[in-house]
Length: 309
Image (cartoon, rainbow, N blue to C red):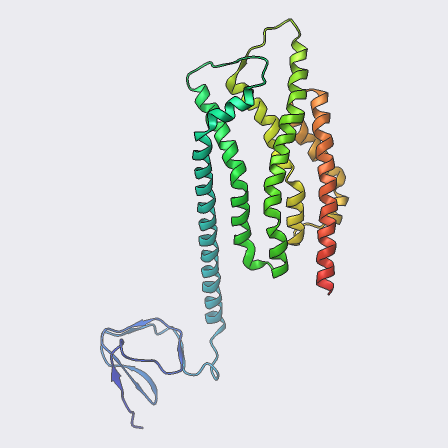
């Protein structure tokens, strides 16, 4: 049978409607006839182990070929997710550094506001102590100011996986995170810290001279305030995870005794070793947990009602 040959170059040749699953390279050209594809130059290199499918409708791709395509598609999606995560992290870190620079500019004013009502003078044991305190204060302020930015970047990262209703609901959690963090800091600073400090100073009486270093004082202050800023965000975090279907409030109810035990351990770790401080911390944490479970139930019931309709 005679063959009709077509000679062309790789740059101008347009393949017919068939799929080639092998890998090949050619430095000159190819010919295509009635019986298939033929080499015309010795410079061509065809992977003989690869199969050629002239018509996908008649000869569908092999299972190995489909699996290879699926793996490549999954790898591309994973790379896209990592690239998106990297972008969100860069924006969050940039915002934190910007807030840190601004807060460090006003760190002396913040420092004087914190220590203005102290009945004693703070001491420095080294020239680098005050710089360390300034860095700690600026970092806390920058971290608090960066919470809305970090929450918004997290929302943008998971936004494609949410329904339009879930997007609107979860977007409202962002300002709540910031406000609850400030509420936790305020509770620790204005309520808990004065009580604990007064109690501990009363233990010394007139037997000891009061002497506080700046670094130790601010570390003690952060240990009593910063954990509350994080723990006060528990209701919003539970509502957010419930709206995503990760948490079930009824399972949280069943785990109540384990949650109470964990909260008691946390309160003991973040407070000085005295009974009054532990009680002052345990009670708000338990109340926060119960409020979180109640709010989680509301979100769960609303989600179930929307799914049923």
